[in-house]
Image 1 (cartoon, one colour):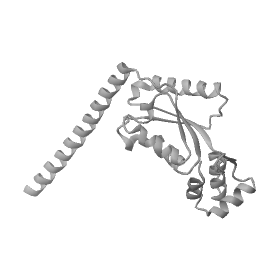
Image 2: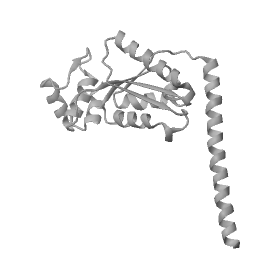
Image 3: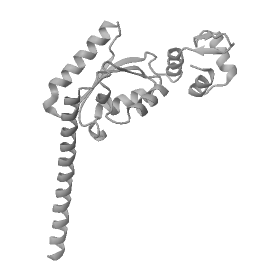
Image 4: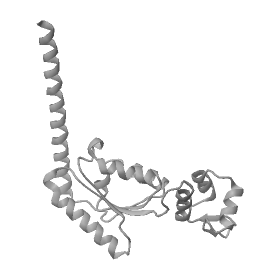
Length: 200
């Protein structure tokens, strides 16, 4: 991490940055050009410590399916992610899971909780089985956003299962259409009642 980025994140001056580096609070490696490359973890830990929050940054798992009938797939995702972390010696600090369409942010409650943790600089890694478990569209946007807060998205499988992918997209479209139609008919009933009351 470059000095400019560190100063921006911590909101400190160059002289303060220099002092923190000399005191060993912020770890840095001197490059051949004379500049310093700062260790991101030491930067985020200092930020948390400074704000009075827990300094331990977490590695967590995120899993998602679209419908309740895919619960077994949700269990499988978590199991695969856990084994992946264990094989690398990573401590698992939490599991976030949602049963909701990737397009329906309102119902992705655990995703909102995860996002709050990320925006508080508390998450070091988010482990997912496939990119679309986190986000079906706009993955690169969220990847860059998470990086800004020191969070790495670890994708176990970079390929996609086209059959399952297509089936899930169809399920999501059906769910959204059903939700829309229910709201539409509900509004129609309300309007009808208002008109009937007005006529009376």
